Length: 295
Length: 130
Image 1 (cartoon, rainbow over the protein chains, first blue to last red):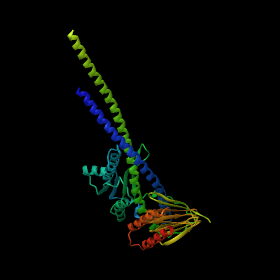
Image 2: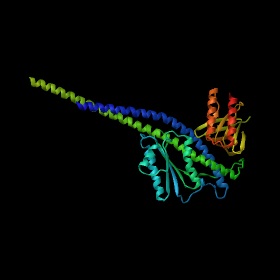
Image 3: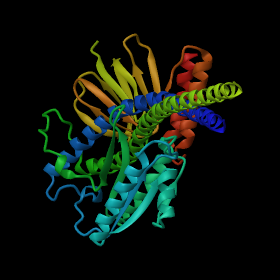
Image 4: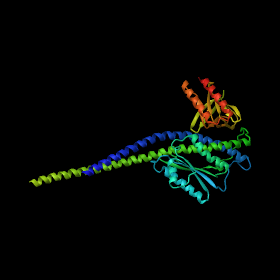
């Protein structure tokens, strides 16, 4: 019976797929562990960095009339153009990971368009870049192999354009959108406004009595230098967090796929056995009726 | 002798966490040393070598390309961008650390006079270890 062979072929094909998805899951699990560890270690740096910036910015904000004299900390009233940097994966097969980021990007672009603000889109990651190219949304620039292998130096180079343009007044804001790692099961979408830095969060700390006096000019120079690093680091962290999230998302997607394949094989096996039984029964009836007719 | 707590962090994690007798840092306006109970201070660091003198008088050198230090009475926290610790158990480990350090140095623009100084310093730090 041809039907039997068809089912058998189907079973084989599905179990091959299952093997692939299981292997992909295992690979992602291993990679996830490494990526997560890197992100975790890196978070320490972020905490201290924020602490130092908050301390210095807070001190300047409170001690000087007119607040901080730096464009990165200024409130810009009528923004004309903003930069949106998004991070997606270079590869697919990771559930809704990329599409979530893309949706958030589209939403933010629309928000700005409604306010008559021009958007300069900068993309990292093949999937997102391809999507916007296909939909004929203009990208200012893009890199495609950075999100799978985050490198500090390349991340710095990429974001440097935005920092410079911001300081020169060419753009009035910078957002980074990426899908970050929350835990093994969930990813968390981050739409963060990097520039201008929100000064509301800086409180006037009590100046310690033993605090060494730093010249105000010096402090501002220090803050200027720090803010560059702060933005560069925000970019780098977005990349490593995104990698961790990508692997966790893929791990989950592949796990689901493996389970689905398993269920499918099970169903097909039942179908196969039924068909085989039917074939045997038919054959038996044929023999018996043949014998009957001989009598 | 009193010791101070020292933490050195890079974007890729903590590279030094421990106690030191004194630490010499390449400040933007010149090298300076920090002992325990130093008064509070935050300042920028430029490319150079951080020398950490530990309790057993051994000195550990770490090359950095940029940093910021926050000192208070109990501890010093150094945030750096790129760092290479010049240490190792074997000669080959030291040699490879040295190579890495040189690479880091060459990645920084060589207009800075501090670089030449840093190069000389790492050479001597490695010599000391060997």
